[in-house]
Image (cartoon, rainbow, N blue to C red; front, side, top):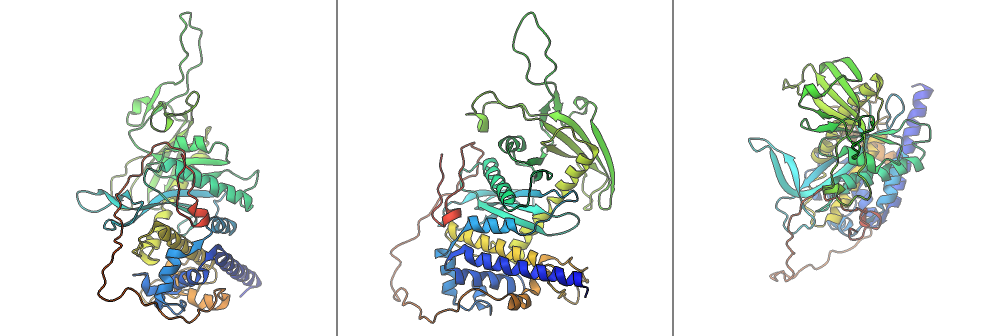
Length: 487
């Protein structure tokens, strides 16, 4: 092994050890039980089926009562853990730019009538009724994206959407906090390329760009194919009759080719999976805002939020489906051919976040526990994120412990699930800051034959709406207390 490789392995080992020590410092109450629960999650062979099975792992030296006690009564300094995640090395694009992606993933709890703060979550099922609304806890996740073909992302933040929350405002607060933490950690410095935030359909991209206009960020989002944009207002000409000058130009209808006009940039790229990809860009297009919904109580005149509309058409789809065009809106203007290629290629990388969600749910068992308290669900969510961060840091250290039917992987190209197989051997070298458990005896419990005189309260299911209300991040993300919302 060369000295350069030894240096890389030594740095990776140091990063894993430092992050584990910082994670233990973030566990302010019942930290030993929570830290060993995270280790059991990392070292268990195979997918997590139930939460109590983790108590049988050798890395968890306590009983199953301490496991549930840590999730229900423990405390995590979420703000410090967010800063720790922002301080570790992050993936970057070819030009050194940080690319963030935000999306919502539900923790479905359809039959948990005693769980508070549930909302109707949009799910895409099978059969005729594909679009379904199922009660659960929706979580908004923000992660940094890598380049190339990969299933890795760097998860930086997670917020549970409460009933009545405005998704656009919650995402704005998340992105603002993440960018500020990246700046404080030295990940972004003045003169660096602006951070690109990639969103899927369902987000109000122009509104998010307007709320984040004071930060060094660019917004890129997919738009519905039935949208209508407006061109810039024509030059003002003196009219002897008077009247108010127009604020908007002609319409740009996505479904009407006649209204498109001449594009400002066109690129054609040969891809391996999609064949020939053609992207067209039209500059300085904006939506026509009206005083309703989120803009109902806006002070002053409504803003003109200009951007670039990109239409992407591919020759074929790997699945063989209908290759419908994809419409994108970028908050920048004056796009060049390089900007157009960078935008649509970054948008395709956004789907790597779906691999992370699938790993969380199918392998790490994020949505397996039947927890009643949403605060306990938040703690378990952040433990899963902390475990995933350790897997990402351990990528150069992991050996390829592949199954006989699996193909060998290239060096440093292991998937997260295959890195997890060898983490138990790595843990013995990094050590554990958690203290040894103290011998205790279980409590007497409820006397046999007695009835429960305190039945659990039933809660109704709410909805996540775009109400436009002012949003403040709940205080339980910082102190582990009950969530609150301020007007």
